[in-house]
Length: 344
Image (cartoon, rainbow, N blue to C red; front, side):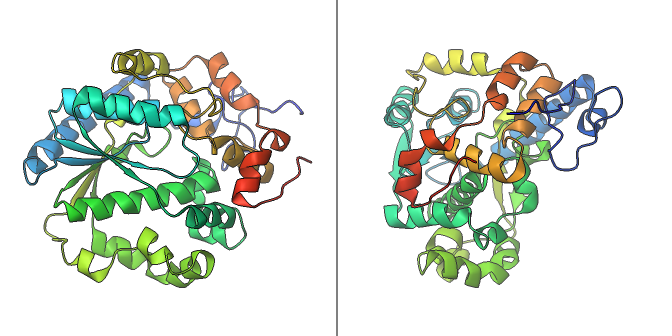
C-alpha cells in the first residue's frame, strides 16, 4: 500500500472529504477546531445542559432512560456513568445484529448484572439483517445514507445505527420514557449531540420520501425497523420531545481509562472484533468496503479528534487506522451477508 499523506497534527488523510493540508502539513480541520481551553469550556457547558435535561426528565415512568447498549467499551462506560453518577433507572437494550461477539454478549450481562440494570436483548430476523447489510453497500442502498454520515462510519455501520436508533425510539414511546442515551464519543458525532431534542413528527416527515426506497430494498419489514406506526406516534407529545443524550461527549477520557473503569464491573476485552470495535465481528468488513470506495478509514474523524485534544497518542492512532482489513480474511462475513468482493 502506498504511503498516505496525512495531517501532521492529527491523522486525517488526504482522501478525507473536504480536507486541505497546508504547506506546514496541517489540515483545515485542525486549523478550524476549537482550542483545548475552548473545548474544555464547551464540554463543561454541555455537561451542565445534560444535567438539566436529565433532572427535568427523570422519574416520569418506570425507566428514566432507554440506553443503546452494545456491550462495547463506550456504551458500557456510558451505562456505568448514567447509573453511578446520575442515579438513573435505565433499561439497557442490545440489538443482536447476528455478528455480536460472544464475549460482547457476556459483557452485556456482566455489566448490567453488576450495575443492577434491567437488560433487553432484541434479535431482529436474521434474513432481514443480512439483506440490510447486503443492500447497504449497493448503489440504491447508499441513497438512504446521509453523505456526511459516511465521514464518520461505514455504510454497513450506518444502516445498523439507523435501525438501532429507531428501536430505541419505539421503546421510549412504549415505556413513556423521555431520555434515550447513546455511547458516542467525540468525533463520531458533532459535540452538540451531547443533548438533542428530537421532534418525532419532524423526524418522520423528513424520512417520508424515502419509504418506497426502503421497501424496495428491505421489503415489508422496512417500516417496522425504520419508521414509526401511527399508533406509536399518537403516544408522542410534541410539547414534551424526546431527549437524546451522549454523556461521553462531555468528557475527555482515554480508551485506557474507560477500560480500567469497566473492568471492575466484569468487562473483558474481545479478541475477535478487529482493532476498532469491542463488540461487532462485522466491523472490519465495513471498514474494508468503506476504504475500497472512499480511500479513507471510517474511524479517521473520531480518532483525529482524540489526537487533536491529547486524548490519544498519535502513534497509537496511526496504528489503528493505517492497517486496512483485507477481504481474504473476511470471507465468512461476506458469505453470511451474501456479497462477493475481491481485494484488488
